[in-house]
Structure formats: structure tokens, C-alpha cells
Length: 298
Image 1 (cartoon, helix red, strand yellow):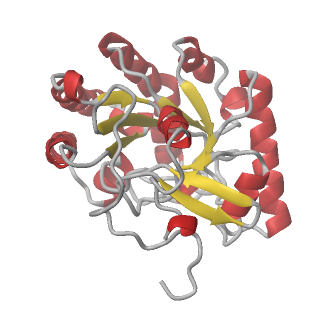
Image 2 (cartoon, helix red, strand yellow):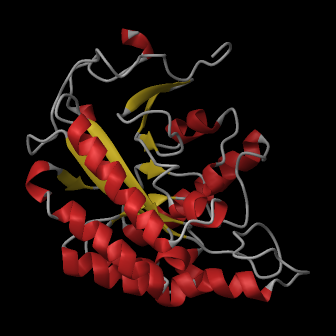
């Protein structure tokens, strides 16, 4: 940790205890990534090793998520009464008209996720990164009628200045960090910004694209993770995020496994708080200083 200054080392055991708004200790949220990519240029997840540009195979696979998979997932969430935190590339508004609006119509929160997933923000000079954040924020503010409160960098990409720039741009929480199972305050040059846990294990890209897990194995991972966290939460508040991408989990053969995993979680609805990332951040803001790890209480 030498030279690291964003958050303090505070082991999870021995921290102050609290409960979520409904009196439970396990908060569960779905982080749905709605992403767009450039044809023949820029970054993009690959189902198979890409060929020369334009990479029609992988571009078409990713575009399936926005044309089909996202709407199948929306139907699943709607039928199960599940809220979602939508992590939105701002270019979705122009590239996929009606997609973001479909999730807005059911009351889902829309959070910032850069302009597109064809680029990383962490490799940019500070002025260029500031401009990227400003452009994406302006688009979301205009289309949603409110400033987005949370941000996930495209490709979980951060520069050394990213938390500072997000706090200065009016964000109250970010989702890039996977170092804890509880929210943690991060230091910025202008004040504080809250880190809400976002998963890199319960995340379909690392699991399915990276580790080549099948849909059934990923669903079993969700169930096992949930069952263990539910037991652990008997003594402390915890957050379980589930990170999903429509071009992966919106495929019919994987969607069926996801449905079973969500059915399992919902069977314990009375013991958990099914919520959105923004509501988790809102609740933390009501807690006394020192409850959530912070340099000021280290």
C-alpha cells in the first residue's frame, strides 16, 4: 500500500455495524452494462480471437446484446420485480434509440459509464479525461433530466486522477473498485467520493469470456456467492453486486441459467435488501461519520 492514498486499510472484522433500510444486512443489486462499440475501430470484448478489421464476428456478437439480449433481460427483470442499476455508455442514446428509454420507463437508475466501450479513460491526459466525463455526463443529464450520481469507467479504467475528476464533476459514488464487500469512502483532492462494491468475480465478462465458464457454472457461482454472503451478513452489513452484459447473459442458453439463479435469490427476499447502487450510496450518506471506513476515522 506504499504510496496509495485513496482509502485506508481497515479489515472488515471489527468495523462499526449497521443495517440496511429494511433492517436486513445483505444488499443485492444488479449492475446491467449497456455498452456500444465502434465498427472496425477501437476496443471490444471478443467471443473468439478477432480477425482483421472490420471484425464482423465480434461486432455482431456485441450488437446482439443491444438489439435482442437487453430486451430479453428487461422482460426477465420485469417479471421478477427486480430493479437494476443501468451502467450506460452515453453513445447508446444515438446508436440504439429506445434502449435506454426502455429501462428508464420501468424506473431503473441510469449511471455513467463513459461515452462508449471502444475506449478507455485511464489512458487519457487529464484534460481529455475531464472532457470525456463532461461529455458523457451532459448527455445523461439532458436525456434523463437529472445529473447521474454514480460512475463506472469503461473497462474499469481509471487514471491516477479519475476519482478527483468524478468528484469535481458532481458524482457522489463510483463503482470501479472491487476491494471490499462494504462501501468505503475514498479521498479526492476536493473532498470524498464513495466506493460502492462492484464485482469482478460475480461478473459475466471475467467469468465467461475470460475464464471460459459455461452459463450453468456462472449461475452456480452466483448462487454459491449469495448463499455464503447471506450467512456472513448475519453479523455485518454486506453488498453483493451482480455484473451483467446483455451480449453475454442475454443469450438464450445463458438467460435460462440466470433466471434460475435469480429465482434462488428471490426465495430469500425477506432476508435481503434488493436495491440499486444509488440507494446503497444514499443510505451510507445517512450514517454517522466513522461508521464507514474513511481516512478521517482510520
